[in-house]
Image 1 (spheres, rainbow, N blue to C red):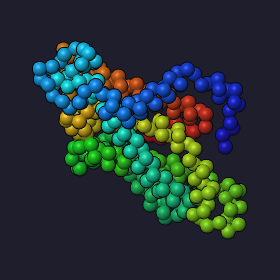
Image 2: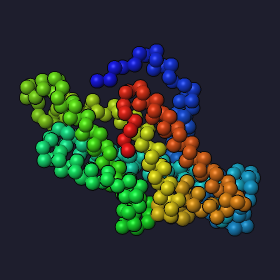
Image 3: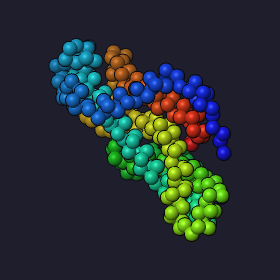
Image 4: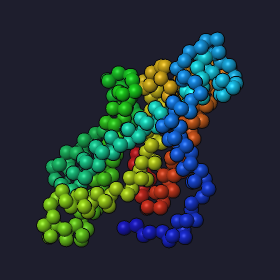
Length: 281
């Protein structure tokens, strides 16, 4: 069992940078939610007479090769990148939590079957496996989300299995069995409350991975398809203009970097606070 850190040590590690990262994430979430009211222009409106123009009052960050507002596309891109990352995390977590808890608590052939399945998936680099699945399903955002979900859940399953196997040997679980509690009640009232706190840490760390994977797939042309605005797709579209208009790649690249760094810094701080391992992959 991890020994809690003294409160003074915990507070001393809360740096202004941590609060800044938290504000960045809250701000990005707000931008994604209220994009239709914040964006100054239609992100998909093509106006070839305005293509590759610099910043102006009508286009605060300028326009892309099709005359579309860069700022509007960045704002709407946050909805796709963050929204899909949340969806992948929640779905993968739910599948992994169910299977990991079942394997850890039941043991026996159920544990062996599920863990051998996890071992088979983890035998391949996750991004390579996602590429293979997208190649089978076909390109598209929905296919990328499904592929990432099918790959990511195994990491959660193995982690939760280990937690459950440790918890089920504790004295309070034995006492619950003696009192006649059913397996479902033990899992619901004793095991799940003890393994759910680390989800906050896992969520912040894994959101960065999910955003990076979605952006990578879109950059390769396998994820979000034109004209939908998404940060990775914007980098893909702007790569042909890297010499003349590098801002087409710089702006979305900075957005991806800022969000991922913020998630990682917040996640590392929470991992230290709760004594949770930061290694999943």
